Image (cartoon, rainbow, N blue to C red; front, side, top):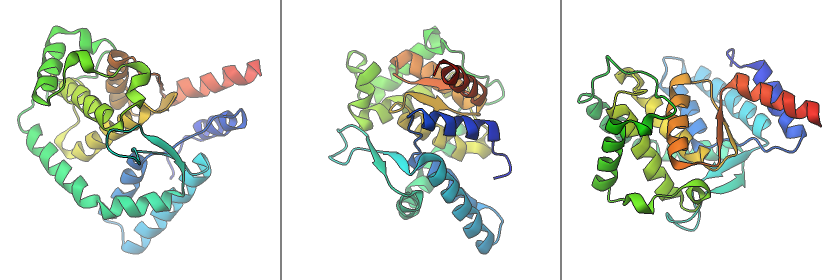
Length: 244
């Protein structure tokens, strides 16, 4: 709560004044749920979570990105619901998150971390990264010529989720943007944020390492979304406000 970027919050509210929708996703709620895994008392955890949920509800007017309702092959959807409703679903399914974290921790044992550096914007032009990416596509049963690009990333939530996951894992395998083993949970959330981000026009994050991986992946897939850090977003809003 204390680390909120007030300038960014003001820019978000200003963008809403000009008609923009600010949207949260289950990835944000998963991060909030992690408060329960701290050493705080249950009473303090409940209070912190309530504060975060109310702040998120106020910031987004309860607009949320969700997977397809019609089935795994359908597009993601935009829905207005209080973050507390999403919180209940996330808690009910949290066992799956523990399972994913366990798998990710085991995989990290096979990837050297000492030389990990931020991913360059053109990472997928690197011969080694591209080779890893194509190999992962093959192993997961995807054909390169059938990949979704641009607006088609929004046609199938499940397919886009699989491809974004492959992008991030390929970058990790090549030594780009790999989090420490102690931050395995953060790495999983990065992928989830990037998946839902393909449904947005602008994606804002203050996580430099994550943003670099997202920019490289979105450039490869020609995503209709502009990734920005907080400073870039504030400047973007100010420029557009000046034109209004």
